[in-house]
Length: 461
Image (cartoon, rainbow, N blue to C red; front, side, top):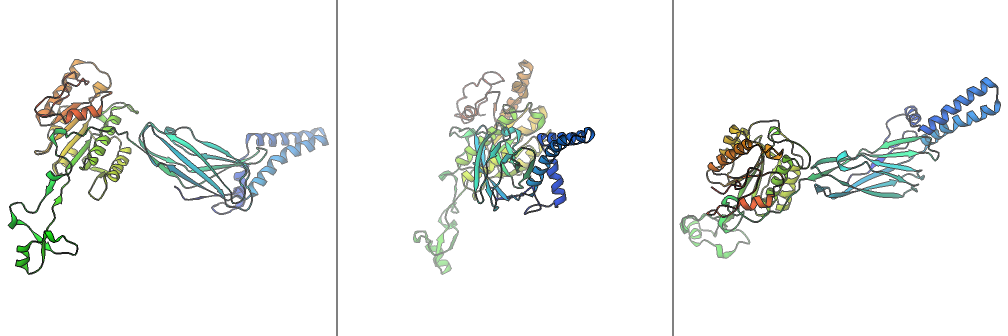
């Protein structure tokens, strides 16, 4: 929710005004509407005609027509309005195609009532039309609240504001616009899908007894004790160490170790074609978001990596963050991810070589022979690796058998390197692909009718 912003009067300098009375009056004259300019022009023309023709009655009519818009300008300029505005988003972060409601509040903090106010909020084109409201007279100390809904089919961060207030006179001769300085940001995160609870590539679970690290690895003598602290369980007292050190010693607690996972998102502009909600790059971003959220819920420590080799800001979860908080950070990071201008995956390969290992899930765009060789080397020796490959030829509807054969060769090269490689074509279901990636090892998964032909979904090597 933004703080209150001072709306200034169209009259002499008040709180929040920077210009003097002369410049304010010139700005007020510039606010004449078409009606006001027409009245002023007609009045001047009638006055000139009355002087030429010697008609006194026409002179009175001309003066009336010319003075009325000028009088409205002066009155509107001298009127002191002090209003504050605020904006509140519910919620401030939404998935694509979801609605958010924006609440606007205008308070009159002056001692005089306002006239007719026209309220307008600046909204990006992707969120819908610019909302406009007409507010009746606001009494001193009164307030008015209005709201509108926004919706976007594209992820991103969208600024809302600043709020603009348009004041007008009762005759519609003059309009003055005053703006507030505060604005808010609406975050539209990628769409996520619930994934089946399978272990892709034979990965270990995120937490549990199988991932507990105990200091005692070879027997009772290898236990590293520590001094007794108030509140320690007396059942953990290590009597042999107590006798040796002459003070009460206890066994160290076993420390749980979270399984690690790296979600690699290929953002190369040359690897994808097209744009919009149904573009392959948006499918890859949505898939990376779904996998990251799913693995965080399963207890994994997730790192988000792009093809440039650097982890995205906020793209690493830690034990200090709850799964829901870490998932929110991941989604906000993916909401703003854009194409990179790089053409090579060498940066990601270097980052993975110096990483911490664990499960690797990659969303890759179009690959040539060189990039396929680099991707094949990304898989660590001891960790499972799953790749969802989006071939540009399949997404643009190219039915050339040679293109499908080349894509199949690249998938086979990844599988030979130990990857579980799955093709992702237009309309592919990520939950189904995820289930295939976690299929039973001894048996080959069912054929997947993907863009590269039936039976090319790829089993676990």
